[in-house]
Each structure stands twice: as C-alpha cells, then as structure tokens.
Length: 542
Image (cartoon, rainbow, N blue to C red; front, side, top):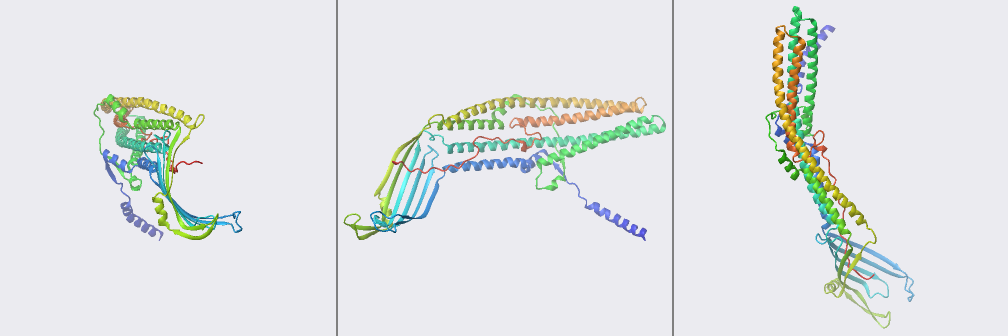
C-alpha cells in the first residue's frame, strides 16, 4: 500500500513539473543603445530629479523676495468702551462713559526704484459719550491720509529688500546651472556604466573561452596519461588550471551583474520594480579608432562657459552685492517724510447758549455724507513735511560687516583664479588620457596577436611531444591576460572620451559619477526674510 501511494505521488510530481517550469518567470531582454540609456536617465534618475526640484525652490524664493514690493492692504475694525472719573466741577458721581466704534483701511507699498514707501489710508469712527463737554453726541469722524517716506542717502540705492531680491534672482540662475551640471555628470555616469557593462560582458566571454581551452587541454592530457605518454602530474596541473579558470569566470560573471545593476540604478524608473529582473543588452560598440582632441580649444571653451566657473562667478557677484549693500548702510539715515490728511466731523451737534458750559438749547444733525463731503473739500486739512536723521556714534555694525564682506569678496575672486587653474589642468589631463589610452589599444592588439601566435606554436609543439603542459598553460594565461588588457584599454579609452567631453562644461561628479554627488553651493543671504513695508505717517512735533 505504501509503495502504491509513493508511486502515485511520484507520478503526480512528474506531471506537475512541466507546468511549474512553464510558470517560471522568463527574464526579459532589453536592447539598449547609448542614446536610449541617456534618455532614460534624464527622465527617471531620482538624484537628478532632486537637483531639478532645487530650481523650483529657488524660483519660489524669488517670488518670496519680490513680495516685499507688492502692495500691502491692512484694515482694522473694533469697538471700545471707556469709563472715566467725573469732572471736578460736576456733582455727577457716575463718571464719564465713552463708547466708540472705529475702523480703518489702507494700502502701502515699497517702491523698487529709490526704496521709498507710500501709503494711503482711510479711517472712520462713531463716538458716544455722556460728557457735558462734548460738542457732538454721537460724534462722526472720518479722515483720508496720504503719506510718503523717501530715504535720501542710506537705503536709497540698495536696501535689504533689494539685496534679497537681487541675490534670490542670482541664486535661481545658479540653481539652473547646478541642474545643467548635474545633467552632464549624470550623462557621463551613464556612459561610464554603459561601457563598463559592455566590457564586463566581453570579459565573461573571454573567461568562458579560456575555460573551454583549459578543459580541452585536460582532455588531451587525460588521453596521454591513459596511454602512458604523459605522467599523471601533467593531468593534475591541467585540472588545477581548469579550476582557476572556472573561478575567474565566476568572478567575471559577478562583476558583469554588478555593472548591470549600476547601469540600472542610473536609468531605471524607481516605481518599476520589474526593471531589476530585465536583462540589459548594450547594442552600441565602443570607438577604437583614434579620435583627435584639441586640448587648447577645450581649455578656452571651459574657461568661458564651464558651469562650476559660472557658479563661482555668481558667488563673486553675490559678495559684491553684499559689499555694495553694507557700503550703502554706512551712510547717514536721512529721510524725507511728508503727509497730508483731510478730515470731516459730524453727527448730532449740541447747541448751547450762555457761559461755560452753557445751556443746551437744541441740536443740529449732520450725517455721514456731510462728513465725507468735508473730507473731500478739505475743510480740516493737516499736513507735515520734514527730514529725519539717524546716525550711529562710533564703530557701527555695518562697518564691521563691510570689513568681513570685503574679505569674502577677495576670497571669492581667489577661488575663481584657483578654479581656472584646476580646470585647465583637468582638461589637459583628460586630453592626455584620450591619447594614451588610444596608444594602449594599439599596444594591446599587438600583444594579443603575438600571444595567439605563441599559443598556436606551443599547441603544435605539445601535439608533437616537444612541449609541456606547463608551457601550454602559460601560453594560455598570457593570451587571456592580453585579451583582458585589450578590453581594459578599450574601456579606459571610452571613459577618457566621455570625461574629455564632460569636463569641458562641468566638473567631475562623485566617485560613482551620480548626480547625487553634486555639491549644493550655499550662497550668502540665500534665505528670504519677510520685509513688510513700513507705514509712513509724516513728521509732527512731539
């Protein structure tokens, strides 16, 4: 019974095995050109997306800084109740009560040119009181005021709001430069990863072919040992070489998979997890013919338009703006203050006769329209024009800040000079790499041809009994090494070409060439502080 049950289970397993094998996922192969890999990286690379969003952040900061010049509307509505002690000349012990409803509304704005501030406001109030001295009960009041404040020295050319706006605009330009630099670095990283994968796959083929050659030598030695033509030690030596070649193949396959993952990480959509299971098949072939490079022209192009130099120049301009602002802040704060107010008054006027406080003989009523009419006919005008002066005694904060800003500006200028030297050196080095790797390819090809000829000779001598397993194995090792050298020289040449093109317009990326390694350059005064325009009110005697 147990035997029959075992046979049934075995039969069921054999029937299900093909179905399970059919359901196993098949690895999808994606033929990938270099252009397609670059396009995918620009669309999907998350590190590049982070830098791209930085431009949106800086655009928002420009809008924040620009808000300092937008009109600001303000309004107030309220009610108050005041109870005061009775006047000494009255016998009323209840005191004086005053109730008021009041409101105001106004608009003020800071001007871009000249840094002046203007304001227009309107206010109205209705006051009720039991005071015997009041001429109106209730009392209606309204007023329209226009005021203007203009700095004459300090803040006229460059104030805090303008500094923030100018630097925020320049930071936005810098963020765009950083994004372009990150694009160049990402593209260079993708190209490096693409050619590395191509070379790693080729190295797997070389190691696999080397293993096949070593296994063929084992078969030949086994036959010779069986017939007594070679000692058993030769077979052991050949088998040991096969084990070594198999280990090299395993390492080459692991390196190829690592290279494939590095390329995936740069170009894949983070939301597409199936992309990790897809096999990437590079279709483009590397350039092996010599490519002429003009180093002097490349240096000139880089000094004029490389992104890191442009960013350093923005730093210098920001430092210059800070120096200009602090120089302006050392001037005396002299301001022209002017205001004009027209008012109207009305309500229920109490008519009196006789001496103070008089006898109430009647009342006269005027409405809100009469109050507004008085306001626009300028029956009760109030105006003022004057100058205010504020000047610190002794060494001011602005003087100390100016000294620091001058030093920072000189530092920025020296950094540009140092960076120009680094740019020229890096381009000349990249140009030499292109030339030297091209020469290495020629040398590696010659070495491969000679290694093939030597292996062919050793094989023939071995078949004739004139050579040993050791010499044949050594010739095989030399051939594999020359083939690996040729692959490495080809990969280095492609990398040198990529670096030479990239280094003309952007600084090198991180150790892995990813955009995430791009440093974020902190510019002074990058944060925007909300600056509300002050309320000018004219100048009056205290």
